[in-house]
Length: 75
Image 1 (cartoon, rainbow, N blue to C red):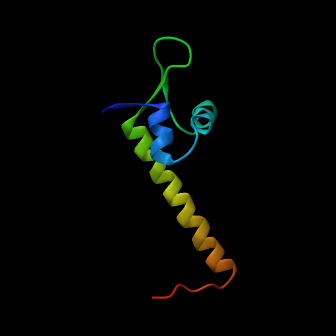
Image 2 (cartoon, rainbow, N blue to C red):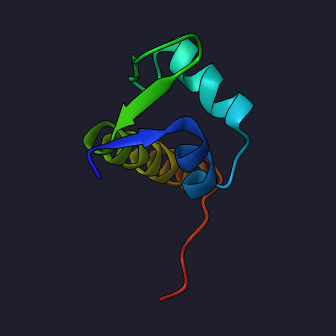
């Protein structure tokens, strides 16, 4: 499937459709409007890139926290 509906995106992320609409509105998650009012689609590739950006941001935040708080990970 090349395009995803916003409710499909929300389900995969485990969030509300309202939150996904906000991500689209702010440009954080690229989407295109098709057909009538409120019919948005997200390309699968854009969705995967969004997830990757979120993962990288979370890893960077965790690394910064560990550095600032002198936390070591157990091996």
